[in-house]
Image (cartoon, rainbow over all chains, first blue to last red; front, side):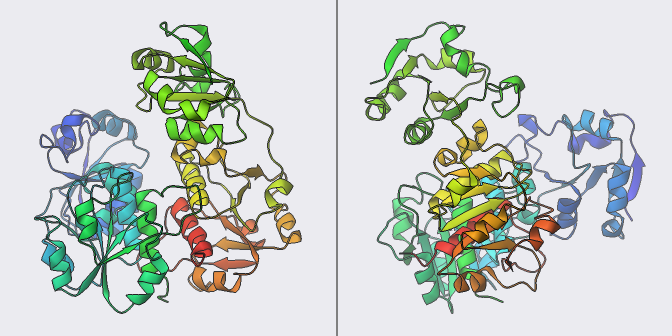
Length: 271
Length: 271
């Protein structure tokens, strides 16, 4: 069981990991941030406890402590128990989820580690919006994607908002940053992957047609920033370009939605 | 061409349609709001001009006026030209899209009007989040849905945030509110529609299997609130229950994503 400490004073230094979470210099993804990963809410805290991220402190109400009792059994971590008011004063805003966990960042995984044992990966370039990034992780988890590879221009998937929108799956779906982009796509190919790029080009084959041909192969699905899409050079590095059939008069879908359709098409004939 | 008026004073009463857009009593979806529909940005303003919504005033920078010149040709509406600073002072926040249009609400369409001529409709219950609602309209437009029917508990699709997230498609994809719910589903059935309900139940047929059987029929795809899903009574009113195949250990997708997958499955074999 976690060690429970009651906290009455929002200024208590034991709450420093959770202090002023909205202020820019506490954003863990920025250089001045502490680098801590914050999980919010019972479900996301449960997923953090099941992940490779090891919380070093929790802050929550007595009610949330009760809901997490089974998950915290045998976990050696302090649980700072406080009222919603004390929590709000320390954190800097009212939390309606009632519990937070803070974990240091473990070492990053390598591209090799993502590729090994994966059959389906998502590859992202220029996805710099935390909500889109969080949605992509949630969709990846739900729709059978084994791992995520980041090219250039992507936001930090461990930022609080991304973790929250991902429902904690940013902590569970393994990911790695390419060290050389887009050259690292070669590592996928060397391991038997076929690299698909999503394009709005109306003469490209549809997602359905392309994915049917690749049913027995390893597949990497590449999506680019909303608006500009994949860079020209990256697009040229793909093996196959595919399009989502769109109604006339419409331009594009949100990047997380487009990725979800690709993941779904890949997974749809699984039982 | 629109009539251009230069405005230097943010307090000019001609800007009243655009004043303090973030304050609660100006939210057009609330009873105290003015009921005006606000379009933001060149693309969304263009879609408003192409829709049944008739703007009664525009406010924007000279640059945006230039970009909209062709769209405003022959349109009898005042364009209040101002600097970004004057706009921010009137609106109450900095707008990075540089142009707004305000339109009164036209009369609501009827359920009959949505059904007539439609082959594929989306039916929403309890979708009370403006972003999800906006996303659903964007996805509906891109993936071939002809109209949207609202059951109970849905937010206003004409609220500014919903219109923005929809990329203006909330103004273009026709929708109606059910007057009697879920009894109005009978109107769909009377017009030859088969009503599908999305369910997390793992023994339900998959979206792919169910949609293949209905390829030649009219289809209504029903989704419920994120979290609780469709109400029991509504679920019982459906003809077919379908599930999205999900990875083990995951619970559900975002409601707009789940709807997008249903729309996609319906449309995927179209050229």
